[in-house]
Image (tube, rainbow, N blue to C red; front, top):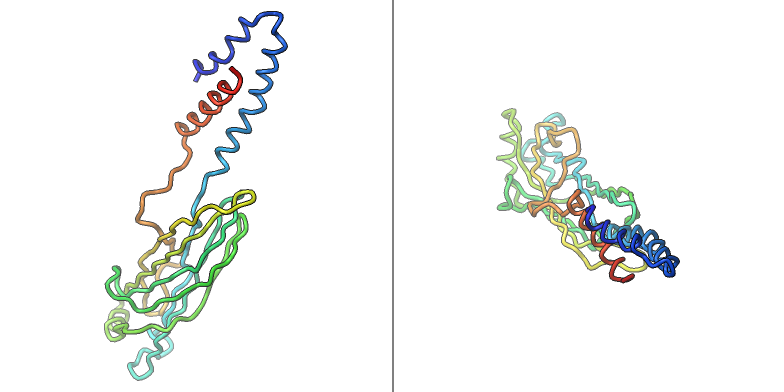
Length: 230
């Protein structure tokens, strides 16, 4: 980086005294435009919303209330979903959010689907969506047997959405958000983990600006300024 900075500083040392004001003006322009250039580049960083399952509850697996008998099966589940926008410079507009619930850790046995209507989410805001969903084809006998034996019934929750992100006066193109997690439920009918369960993506992690990337941004700013000035 020192070499790149020297590339811009050396002309000032060799500047003709009659053109000293012009040289000084160029460097004032660099001082002004370089931070603006870097800021402009960094404002286009996008971080996908963080999604957490706050709660999953199936009344028919709650042995404490005596509803685990086959004649009194309640074929519903309750979910509590948290969506967090961690960005302080971009708001989010969600299209419809599709939730799919599975019995088992994989996606082989679908038991319920739910659609969360699209909505707007402000900067650094957290939204919650809760509802009761009716399940279908869930093997209750198997699930009840597992929790009755002191084990857990395993479910999976997948979320799919295509949010768009607001810049200054326009929105970005829609980006896929596909996340999910397995959830273990015990004889209380609730998820075993007390803390919220993060829904994670199997895709590669989004790119972030590390030291190398930041150095590239700074160098790019110098190059842009040099091209404009010389």
